Image (tube, rainbow, N blue to C red; front, side, top):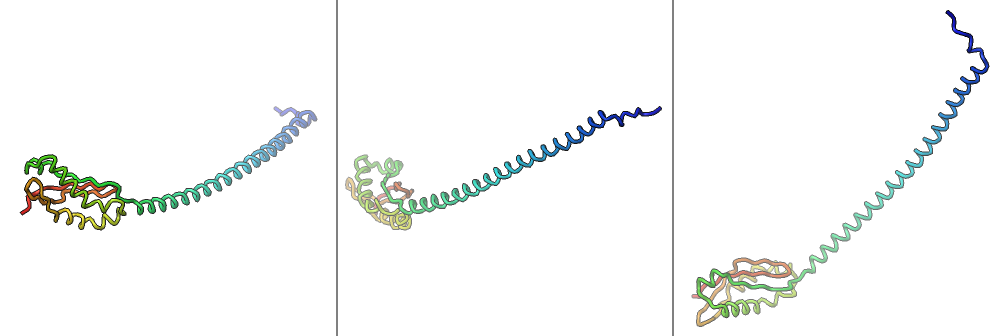
Length: 169
């Protein structure tokens, strides 16, 4: 059996030649379009990398500025308020009336008013002196002498002091 000699037919040769030329042209068009897309995407990626690098640098600058601002603000913190409380157990234990409690708290607060508007770091560094000044104070109320001991001391913009009361010897 023989293969028919159609390969000699000019129409069939033109068809195959057209297929080969069409394949080459379509391959060239594909390469051109793919190259254009790749070039556009590479430019876009480079622009995005530049933008990201710029934004990272800007973010670092903002973070440094913000941390410097926080440090300077923290250094400028001052004492705004002073709260003195006498332990309620001691009030009941020594049977101190509420007016005397208020007077004692007011006297201690008056002695410590000098720390208001002072730098918080300075007050923190002198906290032992603050405690000693309260503990060495003797207040006379209702004919009785009272001595104090600092139970708790919290220092921030508001200084909270909780004190215990004992009879002075």
